Image (tube, rainbow, N blue to C red):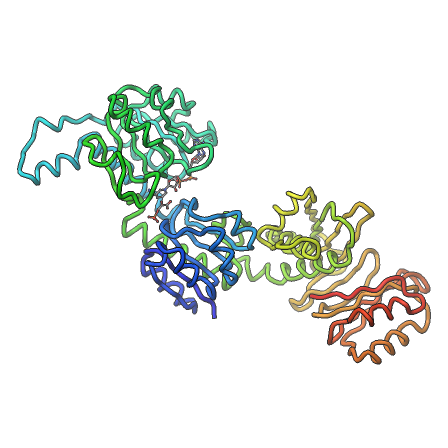
Length: 526
Ligand SMILES: NC(=O)C1=CN([C@@H]2O[C@H](COP(=O)(O)OP(=O)(O)OC[C@H]3O[C@@H](n4cnc5c(N)ncnc54)[C@H](O)[C@@H]3O)[C@@H](O)[C@H]2O)C=CC1
Ligand SMILES: O=C(O)C(=O)COP(=O)(O)O
């Protein structure tokens, strides 16, 4: 039975969705904080749903042999070792939109909290102090808001801030000029944003480029008295530098939802009047939590049950509608890739997938990934459909696709061509009643189904060969299930693709090679 582990505090809706799809769920939000318990719990689970408390480390991934998908009910995936997951053939998915509005609203709320010192005034009023003159605020109207990062959340913040009649400027190297115009924001370099913004809000992922993007140097270039909001990731602001800048008044206030170390229970910024803090609450609304829980549960269920891929960070998307249509072609591509790969002895330099006929109207990326993974499997360890194309590229193996609308003899064919330093080999196949079949090896036509054990023989087409081969197999007790032949011309080179009930052992293979007119023989496994 398909099983999913939920190790963080996800809405119960996730359990409801998964169980309704017939998936068994282990729901234990206490596991996320305890790597040892997680390690013990993960084996036997095919899917793993998390928020930010669980850390999907390389060690945990390595000790989870059954895992096929990690689903992040939220946006940030910095708690998932994506290269390790990819190497292990595990899809990594997130829900890029489910909590974006909620998080943008939190950033706006934090901006108001800073501008009007609402948390401090609230505390003072509850204490019966009525300090009306202590809490002089700043108006947002007409002020400049600087966005560092203008993606999904940043652009919602821009929209809300424009509603408050703020001027919005943005630094984001990947923001196009057209998109900036569409959003009504002025695109700036970071230095210009720092010089002009009255409020700065961060909305980037934490990467090598963004870590400490607001460090001591950057903070010294801001307007004196700037107010800073971080509802993205701890580590974007150098906390020690921020403390210094608050001490000197260079920064008038900071509102932080995220911290360098989380959970943040002890931090030099705590206890200051000019710092407003929340415990990573950006995504914490009922609406957002319901959205991300339902979305990730559906994505995980779709992937595990149908092969549909949505919002994956390490593989191509396959819609739920496409998945059943692609399934037989993915199986065909995989079998052809495997056959071609098993017949290729020397170093591979390129793999080409040629799609012809109806299949060209479908999403061919997953077929190519399946063919490449299967083709490289005999030579490379750990290659799988998730990492195949990137592994190939890393090794300088060129992957290409060609497409032609017309398929000469069948509704749709797929041809896998493997190039090596010595030459190339092409194998073509088609589906018959949904089952994969070989239809051509090189220029030689033949028709064969795939079987777990097969024998491939190249010989000169001379009388007596089939009888001798049959005798040998019979004497060795290996039953022939199907026998398919192809040849260039009478008396020319011929191939036999033979399905056997048992594997063809080394001794038998040697005897086949020793038969008259046999040029080569190879045992295959599928
Ligand atoms: N506090 C919370 O609970 C939540 C925090 N987040 C965090 O918010 C952040 C933003 O999320 P989204 O807007 O959904 O992501 P997104 O991917 O839609 O946008 C991020 C933007 O940052 C930009 N960017 C990347 N590198 C940059 C650089 N070096 N300098 C400037 N900009 C750069 C990208 O071009 C992109 O436009 C993420 O870190 C996410 O994890 C998201 C949801 C909840
Ligand atoms: O979605 C994100 O990136 C978040 O940071 C939300 O984190 P959470 O799921 O609330 O732990």
